[in-house]
Amino acid sequence: MIIYMLFGQRKCHYEGEYAPELLEACDEYSNGENPEGWLAPKLDEYRETGEFDSLVVVRSTVDGAAVDALLDTKPKTVRLALLDEAPRITS
Image 1: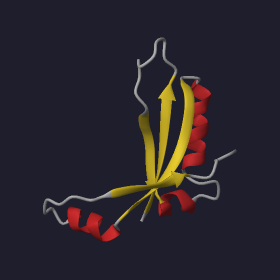
Image 2 (image 1 turned 90 degrees about the vertical axis):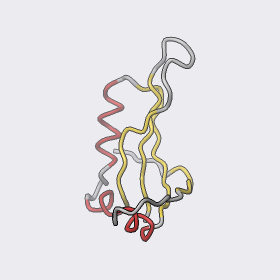
Image 3 (image 1 turned 180 degrees about the vertical axis):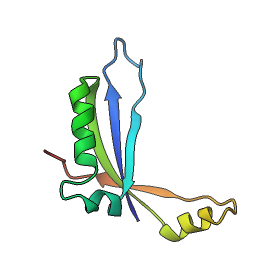
């Protein structure tokens, strides 16, 4: 399963005021159901606030079977591997 994550860095009044934030996340199916993707409008929304110095979408993978096992209510750990920065989303 591929997970898309939208991270943002808020504008700071001094260095280190804000840490990077995970703003939105969705799986490959949610992002692909809409012709422009689910994250593209979200990215525009965050840009329009003027609160962020930078925004980026990254892709990661997670083992679907491991997620299923977690949803089975038995305690387990799932490893998440960062693939790369997702292709730039433009609107």
